[in-house]
Length: 100
Image (tube, rainbow, N blue to C red; front, top):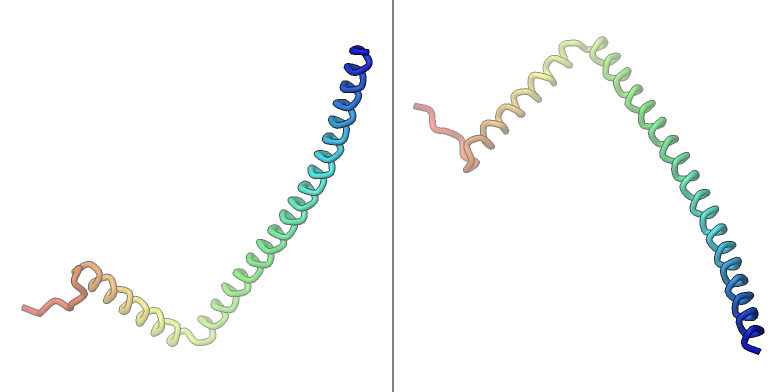
């Protein structure tokens, strides 16, 4: 009688292990598919971003060739503003220095 109970419990354990193995296999395949889909999506987004950046550079080069003086003026203005902001930040209190 004790032997029958051991055999029965061993069978139940095997069935549970098989069921858990199948569940783990299903979860693994679901996760694998999700990761593969996300990798594909990220690669596509990176490719689009690279093409957009390339188009932006081409467009900027075209505009600089078309209007060179305007490009130099915009660059000089941006450099002036950047220098002004750097000077204000370096002072610490945000006020302009008084000329001597």
